[in-house]
Image (cartoon, rainbow, N blue to C red; front, side):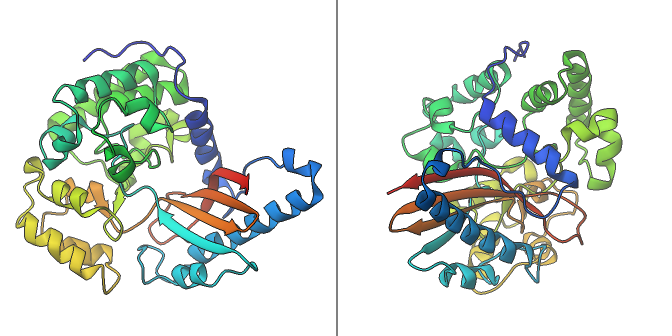
Amino acid sequence: MKARRNDGAATIAVLVLMVLLAASAGGGALILGGTLARERRSVDGYSLRRALEGEGQRIAAVLAADPTPQADSPADPVWAAVGAPGLADATDSLKDVSSALNPNWVQKNVLTKTGLKDLLKDTGSTDILQQRRADQGFFTDITAAYGDLFIEGALEKYCTPYGYPNINVTDEFALRKLYALRTGAEAAADVFHSKIQGLLIAQRILKPEQLRDFLGLDYDALYPVMNVEPTMNVHYVAPRILDALLGYPELKVPHAQATAQAILDARLTREISEADLHRMIGAADNNRIYQYLGVTTWFWKITVKHPSAVLDMVIARIPGAPDAKPRFTVVEERYARQ
């Protein structure tokens, strides 16, 4: 596949998202984004929006105070907070929006060598997908960007535009493109691509403690957008994706089908820790399956509905030390009067 020079076609929205994520690495626990300029024309509208935002921030604060912060599951206190709104006449909902396939980052083999190939319109779709990302960049509107490559309903059910690119399981050309976008250095992006190819040839997993040295002088421009965190939370990933990843032939996970069912059964009744997950999967610790499957959710969508308005707020968890307190930032906010 050829990788063409950046033509500036990457969407503004995703670039803004990446800037927010990078800027928030040293920031506080929660940063409220968005503008209220249009709503200031109406005191009532402004006050209602602020009230809904306050309710969204309340949910985010409960997420940040999780007593088991390294695993996100239906057993967490946040679900009780969602079920008991703090704003009169409001209803809250919360959804993991990152534990799915991200067509901006996914490797071709994951789609062609697993049962996920049935989500594609034809076998040539992955080549088009890979080239389109190299030519045009990445998109938040994945239906408009990639809808011609997937069968009807697949993107909505199994895919997401939200999620960090894990260096260990992201398409090499997508990583090169992202490097060039973040740094503006095409020549350096080629060097970086060579380093990624070296990892692939050696079948080496990049570890968190090696990330700073690997990214070198461009670490601050690339992290935390690029990282080596497991991309999907087994508590919320769709069974079809879970089955496909565990059964991915290249990963050689033992007893894949039985393991998938064991995870699905366990997540109904308890929280699965990272140690639990490793015991259940039974593969070596350096197996790439643990780069796909983890127990942490990286992007959440909080929805606050009121008879007069609805607010959608997408928040991102900022990667950090394993024992660090979770930190979140708002990366997208949509407000509509009803």
